[in-house]
Amino acid sequence: MAKNPTGSKNGKKPSNDKGAFATVSCSTEKLLLAALERGGSCLETGRFLISFREGWVEEGIKSLKAQDFRVADARDFTDQAVSLEDAGDAEAMVFPELGVALVGGDALEQHGMSVLDKVSADSPIEIIEPEYFAFSESSGFKSSDFKNAGSKNSEYLRGFLRAASTIARDLGVDLDRDDPDEGPESDAQQSTWGLTHCKVPQSSWSGAGIKVAVLDTGMDLGHPDFAGREFVTRSFVGEPVQDMNGHGTHCIGTACGPQAPGENTQRYGIAYEAEVYVGKVLTNSGSSTGAGVLAGLNWAIANRCEVISMSLGSQSPVQAAYTHAGEAALRNGCLIIAAAGNSATNTGAPANSPTVMSVASLDPNLKPSSFSNHGKIEIAAPGRDIFSSWPRPTRHKAISGTSMAAPHVAGCAALWAQSDDALRGRKLWQQLMASAQELPLPESSVGAGLVQAP
Image 1: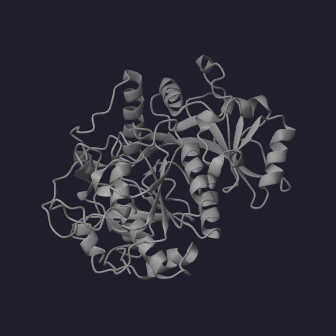
Image 2: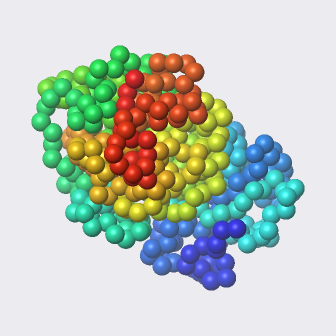
């Protein structure tokens, strides 16, 4: 079983929590501030995730109700698009597509359950584990840190502290700020270096008819490069989908941006005719919780999005909940693609789950980026100084990270999915790896190699 929340003693929360964790509707901001009070570097939210045994979701719901939990179900919401802040007084929220439930930490204790409990073989519950925060893969991570990324949790702690500090100071976000991850703006040319290396320009496929879900900080819905494009949008963090951060707009630009942006701007998008599902699972400060991400995954899988891209995570252990989400995706003809992380250490969650495709970052010389995580890696893609869309008025920006590599794979996956109706789920995973350009580098750094378009 998983450990008790960091920053607590004997599983008890500090007295100043005052039962704030009994329900699942507590906002990310409140959870971040409470965690900051607990110690300043706590990556656990204080809530818990229950993973049910495969096929035992209904029995799991019954078992929670039998113990007098107030239970909400994502199926009670349109398209299963539930923002946890709309869960009212529910003490548990079930994501049926995934076979996972979020439970308030205080509620778990109040109903006589603990992560230390031994689960019997006939129980519908497989495991209870802590919920972790999640951050955009470039939250607070400076370019200078790429060369000195020696601390295992450095990036995620920076993201945590940055998000908490932003909330505490109640600051706004400057869309045209000097982004610490910003690289040099690329000269206008036919295509970005990333698309060129992935052989995107010569592909005859466009992603038409394929649903690509990008779970991130949202999208600048009025971006001129996407004029005339329709988006399916949902927010899972209690904020409008409109992207006030930039990270989500950049990732969507790479995965599904236009074939010809115009105004002498180089091509930066891959699946330019794909149907884009924008799931805002990160706040404008670039922060979220595991359950917020899982809510977006539940929605994307319920809508049978063939490709699901996530450039977010935490330097946390393998989470059964994410593994269940990956299994559910593959069973339903979907594929989850996630950034490996930028801490120059072992792959973080959710990419470290065996059912989620992990993506490492490459530099223009096709060598692993100094910041890119390693270990459990399936494939690699361009991630250094990647030019893509950015919220207005900036419009375009070049930034770096495995966050930028993952949407390259997602875009190419959409092209492969369009090329053959049989390439869904596990078969799409296998095709991406089989078609990758081999690199003379360890598999732990680049996986099968550089992703290639069909």
